[in-house]
Image (cartoon, rainbow, N blue to C red; front, side, top):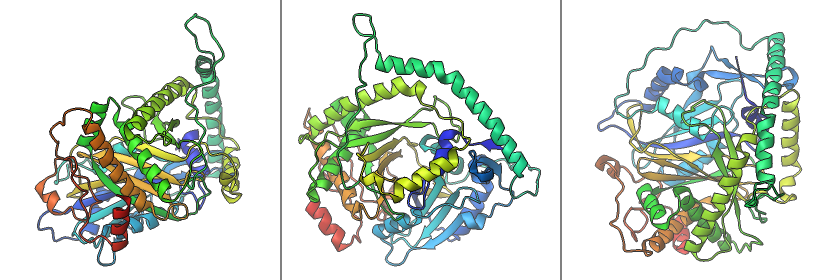
Length: 522
C-alpha cells in the first residue's frame, strides 16, 4: 500500500468529465523489413512481459471511505491485458490528419479508476504502411520526467528486445479492494505523517518567503520588495471553460537547428521554443482579428526533482513567462522572452523550498473535487482574470533510436492536458535529433489547432533565417535519419528539413483545405 502525495492526488481531485487529467504520447513505428506477423498480438505479449519493470502498470487506486483522505496505490492481482492494450484500424486512406483526429478522440475519454490508470492503442491503416501507438496514463501516477523513465522500461535501443528477468511471484490476497478499517487506519496514519512534514518544512518555507519579499539590497539591509516576474495575462479565446472534446496536431522540427539557433543568439533551447510558440500564437490570433490588451503569458512547468530522482510521482511547479507578443521583431521578442524567463526562473528558484509536494489530506478530496466541478460548470474561467493564457512545456528525451516490440520509433509526439481557463497546451519533446511538437486543445476553443501547428513550423523557419543572418552562415546540419526511416516517413507530421530556407516536407496525401490553410499562413 503506497499513499499518493498531496500533489499526485490533486490531479485526481481536480479531474472532471470535461477535464481529464491524463497525459499521452503518439509514436510512429517502422516495422522490420519483411514483417508478416500480427503486430497487435506481438505488442500485447511484449507489454505483458515487461509490465513488472514499472509499478505504474500493475497498481490501481483504493479509495478512502467517504473520500475523506487521498487514495492509496494497491497491486492489481487481476490485470486484464486485453482491456489495456487495444486495436484500432483507421479508415482509408489513412492520412496524418485522420490520425491526429483519432488521437484527439481517444484522448478525450476518462480512464477507468477501478483499473490501473493506463491504456495503449495499436493503430493500423496508415497510408505509409507504418504503425502508430497511442498511450495515455493518468497524471496522478506520472509526470514528464518520470514518464521518460517509464518509457525506457518499455523501449529499447535495439530491434531485438533485451531479455528481462521474470517478475517475482507475489502472494495473492484475493481481495478486490482493501477493508474499510484498514483504509481508515492508513488514512489517519498518513495524515499524521503529512502534518509532521509540514511542521518540519515551516522554517525553510519562511526563509524562502523572506528572501523574496525582504531581499538583502546593496546596503546590506532588507527592504520590502514586490516579487518581479509576475505578469498580468490578457483575455484571449484560450481562456474559457472547456468541454470534454479535444483537438490535436503534431509537427516535427530539427533539433540540431534549434540548438544552433540557441548558440548563435545566446539564448537557451527553451527560450527558442518559447519564442517559436509566441510567434505562432501571434500569427494565429492575428488570423482571427484578436487584439490583445497585453502580451500573452505562458505557464511553464518546471521540475522540482533532484538530480537522479526517478520516483514515479509528480514533483513539478509552474513559472510565468511573458511571451512578449507586443514586440513585432522576432529577434527582439526572443531576447525579451529570454529576460522574462530568467526572471521567472529566479523567482521560482527562490520559492522552490516553499512549494510543498505533500500536505495533509483529511477532508481534502471532496473539497477539491467540489471546487473543480463548480469552477467548470459555473464558467468562472470566463469571468475571472486569467493567470496565464497557454501552457508550454519542454520535455527532454533520448537522442538515439528507440524500439518498441521490435519496431523502430520514427516519431514520438507528446499529447497533454488542457484545463479550464487554459484551453491550449503546447508541449515539445526531443527525440533522436528532432523536436516533436504536440498541440492539445479543447475542440470548442480551437477547432482549427492544425492551423496553429502550421504557424509553429513557419515561425521556426522565419526565426531560423533571421538568426542565421546575425553572423556568417554556418554549414547546415542535417538530421541523422536512417535511410529505411526516410523511405517510410510519409505519414509523419510535416517535418522541417535541417538546411535553411528549405520548404516544409509535406505528406503526399494532404487534404485540400489544409493545403490552402498552409498557403494562406505563409
